Every structure is written in C-alpha cells, then in structure tokens.
Image 1 (spheres, rainbow, N blue to C red):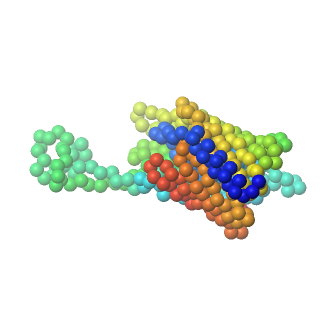
Image 2: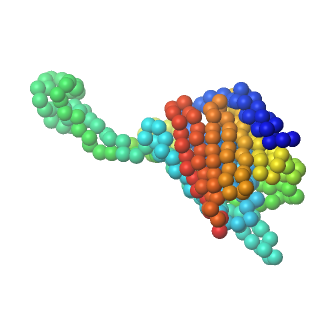
Image 3: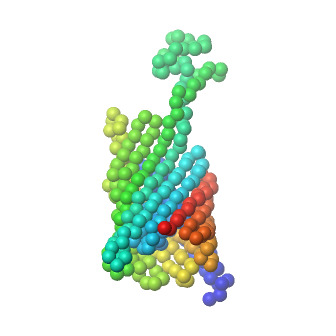
Length: 326
C-alpha cells in the first residue's frame, strides 16, 4: 500500500466518523469534566480511551497508567472564550519491586476550570443594599431603580471555579490486561457558596493483539455536589461510560475510536488519528461531537510539547500542554 493510498484511507476514515458525531450537551453538573485534558488527546478528537499511554491516562482511562515505564509529569493551560481559564497538571510515578519489576503506577492530578475576578456590582441607590439614596431618587421608592446618570459601584470581586483533585492507582491484572482506579475530590465555588463531593473512576485496558487495544472507562461514579445553602440543594453528576478501540497499522500510526454514553444522553462517537514523523514530531486529526480537531507535537530529549485546535460552538479553542519523563 503506497503513501497516497494510506492518506486517502485516513481521510476517508475521519470523514466517515464525523457523520456519526453529535453535539455535546452543556449546562449539567460537572460539565467541565467533559472537557478532557492533554493537547495530544484533544487533537485526536478525545478518542483516547484505548490509547492512554502517557500520564494523562489518569483522566481518560486510569488503567493506561500501568503502561508507563518511567515517571512522567504533564501540564496543560487553555484560555477559552468568555474569559474562561482551564488548567491541568499531574505526576505519575512507577512503583518498582524486586528485580526492578513494576508493582503498579500511582498518580496525583489536579484540574481547575473557572472565571476569575467577576465584579459584584450594585446600584448605589438601592435600598436593599442598606445604602443611602443619592441623586434625585424618590425616598418613597421601595427598592430604588437605575436611571442614566446614576452611579453603579463595584463592591468586590469573586471567582466561579470548579476543581477536580484525584489520586490514581493502576497495575497489570493479568497477561495483557490492566486495571486502574481514581479517587476524586470535586469542589465548586460561586460567589459566597460552595459545594463538594467525593467520587470514583474505573478503567480497564486489554491489548488484544500487537496492533489492537480495547479500553473501557467508567467515570464520575457516586458524585453528588452538596451545596452549603439553606435549602441544602445538591447536583448529581451523571456517570459516563466509554468504550474505546485503537489500531496501529504501522508503528508510527494510531487510529482510535471511542463510543461514549452519559446518563440521560444519546450515544456519542469520537474518532482520531496520530502519525509520528521520525519519532520527533507528530500530526493529529480528529472529530468530537461533530467538531473538527487538529493537533501537533514535537519532542526535545525527555520533553514533549503538544498543541491542539478544537472548533467549538463558542469559538475556536487552542490548548497547549507539555510532558516530561524522568
């Protein structure tokens, strides 16, 4: 098979999968957990469940951590539309036993998503603030009202943030079969209120052949954000189950497909491809919820730098990440 034929097949594969993708849903509790981490995986359309061969596997499929042979750290930063900021960092450490045989891999990860410095504004002449009226506001007005020329003051600034801090453990369970688990602490704060919860993720990976791998992840198990409001309101984060498969027609080429199902939502498909060039640079193409994704990487000794582009509904999203092996 010549290079031209391979290129045509690759483009055809991606075009076909685009037709099966649907728009992701928003506005649900823990929606930021669906954003994904690592520019490498995002450049492949987030079809990473059966790939998961670097430290970001802690998020996508913790079982993949067991494939690491050396400690590794990753970091990602993204400035999104509407002044949203998104950061992720983690460190994975290989546990060695007698004879330098791996006893598993542990990892610690942290995600933070939010908007910082939101101004709390109030009308200076609003009775509900307990402030004196100014200007020509009628004293009989029960709550005050704004008219042109009146003053609006910024009283303070606050953040709207969501965080996910989790520890991971993964190891080989049997020949070519790996398992992993995450234990998570999720927190959200908005103005003067906050919520938190514990949760869990499970992941499994099976190397079915030298070229093919199957993966399964079950995320956000038992997560219910309990708010510190008088009503005691709580938000349940829906469980997401993802089945993935990856295939390597050549050592430097990876094709991946994920089938994703979140509670109360339709099944969604994600697909991606990665091609390494002389082991120092890579290009990626993918589709996620019908949106095109692109990516690239280059390696410098023990460092890998990744970039991804995702065409989202709210505008283009650019993410940059870096990883280092020790």
